[in-house]
Image 1 (cartoon, helix red, strand yellow):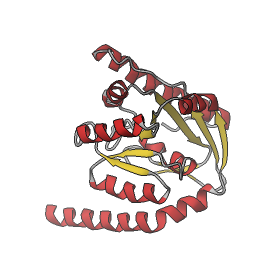
Image 2: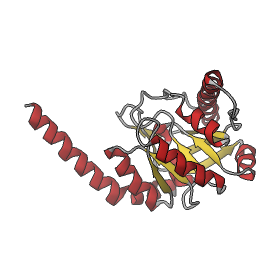
Image 3: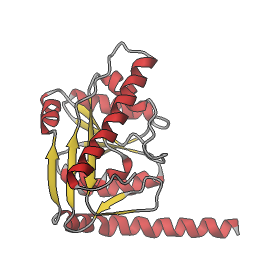
Image 4: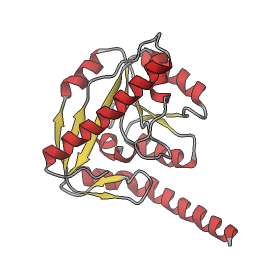
Length: 229
């Protein structure tokens, strides 16, 4: 029974992966063309863009809106080396992103070397700090450690929709519906002192986490909706 269940899950994953690769980009494009976007805090993005590279933090379950909004900019996304990461990689590449495979627990040293080179060249790296497996909205010190190691700031981005599908996954993955209003909120960049120790990493991690929550609260308030956590 266990073997049969495992085979069923593997088959379902393959079918889901095929659908995501084959139809995901077209579906997202069709949906996003009907969205109305409202931006707040653009000055924070402009400030980050004037610097020499930066990191973006967005919750794993909110990644659909940024994937569409920032398409074709040549930005890089840190993607898990897992099978789920492989599925995301194809979708991201179709939207003009470059993918870095690795995480803070596997492939981290190689991924950090890649990010250092990208950031030194003025690039942008997007990270979902509670991914790839959650729990939702949990964060370890990995993102702050990367910011400290690279000397680059972290730009938190909150994304909300007034009407959306929320999947039954651990992150309640959000897909805005047709004609949804989108609130995209940029937070103030979080800097991590290069000479900082464990306490500095903890401070920066909590600052990013608190900012992401606050940005989403503001976004839902502007949309006239209750938060969906």
